[in-house]
Length: 142
Image (cartoon, rainbow, N blue to C red; front, side, top):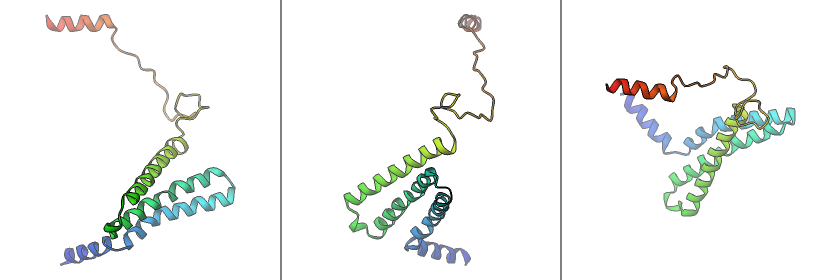
């Protein structure tokens, strides 16, 4: 049965060291792209972008080590994993918000937004004044 073959191979793959290798490939490819871009342009932002992708590797490999050697997984290893996860998550989030989305820029003419907006700013105006809302609620009760 094909389902049995797939499940057997899936279990073999998830229990082996191939899992962290395969998981690391996209991050290594993006790291290399950023590194090549840095070497070509010399722009520091590309080097900082390398750090974003490189910071995912300790998360992957410490997790794999803990999975394969559960008796060796100490409090120190758990702490190292937590530091790696926290750094990677925070750094990646901030990179996306500031560099990719262009938000939270100090010199933007739109508060916490980027200079070029895709949509026009629409001022929020309430439809009812305080007196109008009280009158409508009183009319509903009557």
